[in-house]
Amino acid sequence: MADPAVPEPAIEIENVAQVFGSRTVFQGVSATIGRGEIFVILGGSGCGKSTLLRQIVGLLPPSVGRIRVLGHDMYGQSPQAGGDVLRRIGVMFQAGALFGSLTLLENVMLPLQVHTDLPDEACAQVAMVKLALVGLGDFAGAMPAEISGGMAKRAAIARALALDPPVLFLDEPSAGLDPITSAGLDRLILDLKRDLGTTFVVVTHELASILAIADRCLMLDRAARGVIAAGDPRVLREASAHPTVRAFFRRQPQEGA
Image 1 (cartoon, rainbow, N blue to C red):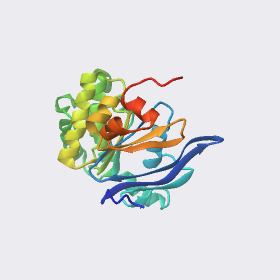
Image 2: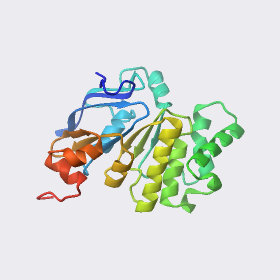
Image 3: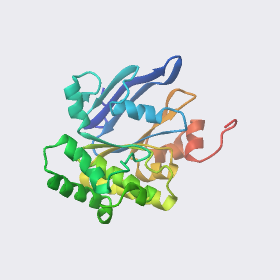
């Protein structure tokens, strides 16, 4: 059921669980993510953030529950219909996953060459626009090994934007970046939301980024095996009575941690 507070849902997660053998990663996870929203999935290490992301993008069928993306059931339709949905989302994986043997321009061109009938010249023109959008217009000919980690994350976002997806998934975009580079990436995400109306689903445990970009968040917890908080992260920081939530948002150690 859609959340009445989110009138135009882009993603609906209904009572989802993931079990590996005898181990339950999480259960009873539900959320509605609105179009044009920056929604953050957060929590400590091992809580299942990336597992939930893999479920939403179609890489891991949930053990229980239902996931709808842009109105389509991710696991209850034909392979062709599922492929159509996947072409309408973009994913930036944690390490960027750029092809080291291709230039940045060629990396961004690749989705266009695979999924459209555009000639290479047109693919290159579109790719240049995407690189310029993330501030890498002057680095189209660079190889991934020649650029910084922050630039690699931006290039990966440009590639994820190649097909103009209405929904973009980012897995730990700030991981391994210094605070200044991370803040620049946060600003890029906010600019893309403002300028393109893109819906973002971001997996991260970086507190500064969460407070800078998130409209709403969902907090998973390994001990609870599920959701322990949801809502505006700034409100959770100030008002949550849950000890783990308070410790996370106030960067306080917990006993035994």
